Amino acid sequence: MQTSALSRYIGLIPSSVMIGAFFVIPFVLILLTSVSTPTDDGGYATSFDLQHFERFLTWFYIERALFSAGLCALIAVLSLLIAYPFTYFLTNFPPRTQTYWLIYILAQLSLSEVLIAFSWQILLSRTAGVANILVWIGVIEKSFAMTPSAGAVVAALVYLTVPFSVLLLFPALSRLDKSLIEASRTLGASPLRTFFTVVVPVTRPAIISGGVTVFVLTLGAIIVPQVLGKPEHWTLSVLITDQAIFNFNMPFASALAVVLLVLSATVIWLVTKFSGKKA
Amino acid sequence: MPTTFSRRRFLGTAAATGAAALAAPSIVSAAQPLKVGTYGGFFEDSFKQFIFPEFTKATGIEVNSVAVPTGETWLVQIKNAARAKTAPADVSLMAGIPRSNGADQKVFKSLDDSKIPNLSNMPDTFKDRYEDGSLYGVGAVSWYITLCTNSDEIPDAPDSWAALWDEQYKDQIGLLGLASNSHMLEVTAATFFGGTDILDTKEGIQQVFDKLSELVPNVRLWYKDEGAFQQALQDGEIPMGQYYHDVAGLAAAEGFPVVSTFPKEGAIVDSGYWIVPEHAKPMDEIHEFINFIAAPETQALLSRNVGTSPVIDPALTDLTAEELAAVSSPKAPIIPRYDIYKDHGNWISDTWSQMIAG
Image 1 (cartoon, helix red, strand yellow):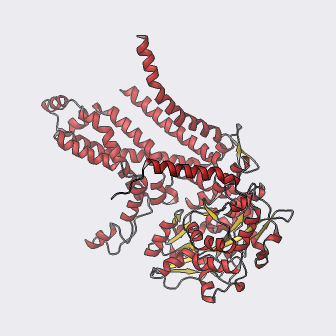
Image 2 (tube, rainbow over the protein chains, first blue to last red; image 1 turned 90 degrees about the vertical axis):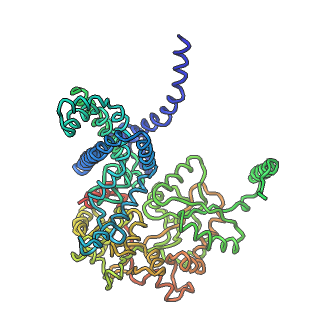
């Protein structure tokens, strides 16, 4: 038995080294940078200085953090609203059809955020955008640009996250015991009532984990808000990029990143705690 | 028949390369190529194509081109290299705030005026000096940010920056997205406060911000990516905004309805200067290179091929009036106040972010 325990530990080594080298060390560096002090020569020195967090504590940055959380929550909800019925109906198709659809959806994940943002920019532009179709069918008189706007940001982010939602919901929905639905129907519940009182509650863990994943994923989006949104739609991630790349203020960028991390950790914690109690 | 790269041939090539690498240190430093840093992309390509071969022809000194990042990143790389007592380039372009920061931290080597005779062609503004009077930066190229319009949408191009505040252009303007690269504080000060002196104090900057914030409803796009604005300007989707005069000229030459106007308050002028990192060795070659770029012939070559404006008295060059008008204007320019971004950097950056977010 000892050998199997040993081999299990040995088996853990590669992944532990990976996680240690590529996740823990950078994270510790970000933490250290976020509390460092700027020096006279334009660099920063290790210390315990909370000035960068104090700078965050103005209404502007707090409002940006709240906006980011609100936007990401909205995207998570919209993304699930689209993905859930789709996945549910998909699981009722023959396995072959399901496989084709899943391959298609997986292929969507190969599109980067950059590509999606710029494609939507063209799609919503005045000269080449969908507004021209509206002109053609006579709904409006003159083409207009639909970007930058809040709607454009939401549309592109939902587009970006729907494939993730489908893939996260699929295992739970495909494993769903169909006899539960049959029982519900036999007992006289309508299909709609069966869906809401049987299917949705049974798959709640998948809905919650899918929602949290989409939320965290969207928090890290920087290109879509920047390209398709006005400055009032820029998330905390965009401001971090500004500080790190354009102002070269690494300590402040790190402090904002730590705030973002705390924000997403809090949301994950709250959601798991809240959903755990109810289950 | 497909070309085969046999193993022996590979070994032979590797051995030769290795031998050359080993032999290199023994060659006298004069035979080593001079490492010149210019901004990667369009700038570096143009320098490699038009300028470096002329320099080698004139002096026999080979040039090894290094692509350097714009902004603060390059200064950080120079500082890190200096800790290891090396220089990532022998001489390199640097503009704006990083140059001023680097000078404060004394990471640039002092140059010898007497070895750069062409300095006499240049106004003093292009000679950066330390407090003790020693020279550390020499002007290389200048470029302008002007008021650009789409002539299909706005047939009569406005001749004043004040047009940016005009309510008829609501939601139709594109401006650069950062305080420190758009220089809109300086533009506002020059347009409404009689010059940039008001920016000397924080209270003054606040006053300028108050005025500047009035144009926010007119701005459709605060761009960080030049390409995004250029596309929108060419298409007429965003028919007006601030943009680089040289690139606007190239777009117009390609037939797009883009007009670049030097406003009556002046266009924003920004310049790249040559700086020499502390541990650069081949000082004679460096001086020779800086002197070569400051020569009237080279400045004319730059204007014609790179679209930059001369940093020397244009009368010394053989540029025709037309060629000169294509790259510059006789109107006094707005000179960026790099000092305010150093003294009040965080505050300006936060106030700016809040302002553009409405």
